[in-house]
Length: 158
Image 1 (cartoon, one colour):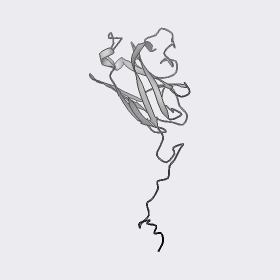
Image 2 (tube, one colour):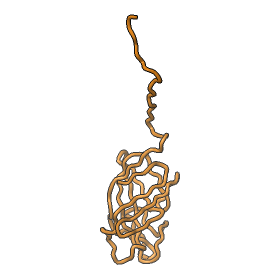
Image 3 (cartoon, rainbow, N blue to C red):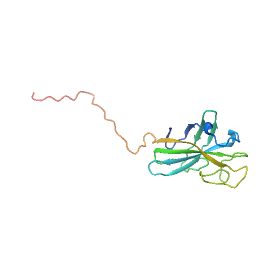
Image 4 (spheres, helix red, strand yellow):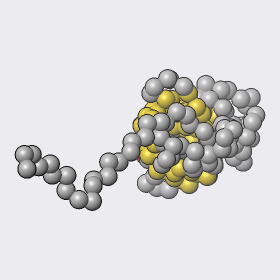
């Protein structure tokens, strides 16, 4: 499970190399497209990680928050709560360029055939993301009861 806080950057560590689909290219030619689906209202958000580091055991995905989200550079997940995530493997033959017209924006997006265009190879991982509210901005806030400094003993019949 990925844990993150609203309106902040977050990092996800996900195993992807064990399930690699396109083994004809090196890991330097692979990026992952994340599809986040909110459990509450079924809203769907797509995002590529700002920085992606693939190692033998896991892939480190660093997502950057921005008020105005972009599939290729930033993310803004709303509302807080649970999201299902699907991670799609995207591969390039030539130089990797995660940008408009060179990287698929969804898992069904098909770009013209070219070495500089990414191709969605398939589903690499699924899981859950918990997105918490920022401290102090929760929708429901509770006030803690402060106990009195002295005892509250009531005496009857003096």
